[in-house]
Image (spheres, rainbow, N blue to C red):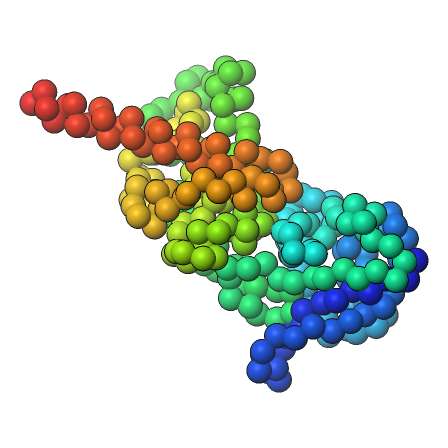
Length: 246
């Protein structure tokens, strides 16, 4: 079917501001949005800039706004968008991050926030004879956040970042902190608190659930954030009680 891709274009070397250009291409209803973008870049306009890598919903590099919603271009089928012959699909870059070119944004701030929560196992205790063992239940407790592919969809969709506090750490960073906060082998919560326990950290989240709604991996992001809030509050109570007992 013949369909029009309405794509936001921006070249910082020649454009004063972003604008939209239309590309009419032939695709099947089962085609992915990524298929259309690749076809345009290969056969119509080689200057089109966008990110992609695995093309199988694992790397997260091709997250963008498709008809106003954060999605992965490699997982979004035209038929799932209700596309019909002669129809139009609007494609824009993620929001909340500086625009680099066309559908590409500067991800430095996003990954700075991710790194700030120390998203790795922290434990100076010597392991057992072979490794640090977890029960199935302990592993299940961190199953949700391990699915994160750092696509940035939740960051783009977050109304706090968009409308109130652009310095908010963001859902993805807090989610990846929770992956270790609730890891039975980890001892690093005190080291993560400077990034998490502050106004621009975890407490900026207002539980709007947009992060959960747009996550391409179906992660309950808001739930993980709220559980981490509760863990920090528990730690505060323990410290307060300990101070009172002195």
